Length: 255
Ligand SMILES: C[S@@+](CC[C@H](N)C(=O)[O-])C[C@H]1O[C@@H](n2cnc3c(N)ncnc32)[C@H](O)[C@@H]1O
Image (cartoon, rainbow, N blue to C red; front, side):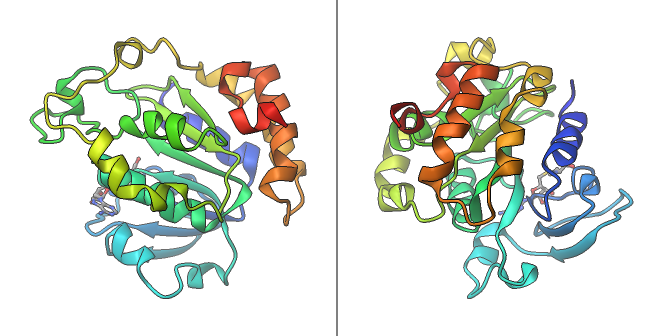
């Protein structure tokens, strides 16, 4: 399954009221939104037809989230679904996640693009290939070390995979508190040491399996003001039952 049909199905399952997209380009993924949508891209050139209540910002994600009120465009309400597909360098993708989680709710879903590079060259920080994922992939290792409370599911879409992140905690500052140490440890010069299991897609869940999983219902049934701690056990059970215990967060499994 390609990434756009997968994302389209996620929109249908989640029925977000507020969607955020970092990295819009021609609008192909933004065109899947039918709700209030916020798009951020310093250089978008739209070619897709869009049919949503849209606020489009011609700026970088760092500048946008540096503004006094990044939720002004949603009347102060958090994003329900976000797609991180902006600058494909590790530190930018990590900061995008930190910013988006802060403006999400515990029942929101964040999706990263390009988490599964097919070759070492494709994952280079200095782009020298036509198809390019950049070095977004170390975000996986960062989550494993610093945020075991999150549910993190690599999805085997074509061409270069997605990463689904759930069980969000907008008040969690672990990544921000350890940002410099994380960059020192996980940002590496080219050639990128992409783990073989990622290149071979050994720890990846099939897109259809993710779409038919029970956790979507758990998110849909959660109260608007649910706390991360209250949602986590049900989410973990549903994730374990439908995609495997390895993908349920550690924090949740313990509760
Ligand atoms: C891969 S494209 C997005 C494709 C789109 N999401 C889709 O699937 O149809 C990446 C986009 O990110 C934008 N971009 C680059 N740096 C950015 C930044 N710092 N913040 C936000 N967007 C950025 C680029 O201008 C480019 O249009």
